[in-house]
Image 1: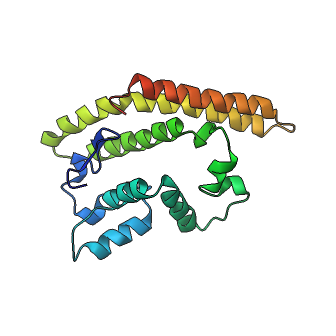
Image 2: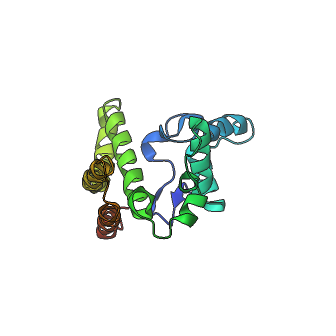
Length: 191
């Protein structure tokens, strides 16, 4: 974390455009409030960003911890065992749809893309060039997300039918995973 770089993902933990902010504010909108709170508590000992805490927990344990925190913070109880973070992944033998790692990666990059676009307006002209470069590097993720989102919308339409075709839903979810994986593989160095 000292290097502020994820060698696995090949990207910064806290993006350059956030580094000028106080560490406790270096977070995305989806970063769990618990990580923000931990950041504020740790600030008297060591200044650490919520994104760094998120990164450390995901690497020490699993993404499941962040999923559980998000669910608890929303105050939403799962309707079935498939929705329980960690357990749901064990029940779902073949990750499909939004549960697939490649689809989650595309969604994370889309969030990062949107954050960059939103912050661009507030930046001084001198820093916009660097942000423009970062936006261009992950612009493909925006297109990938639109592609995946289109399939998700089709899945929703099928599910909302009086008698949903479960096999068609499974095919669409597999297609969603396959397309996201193809996008990530195609732009592996940028992902």
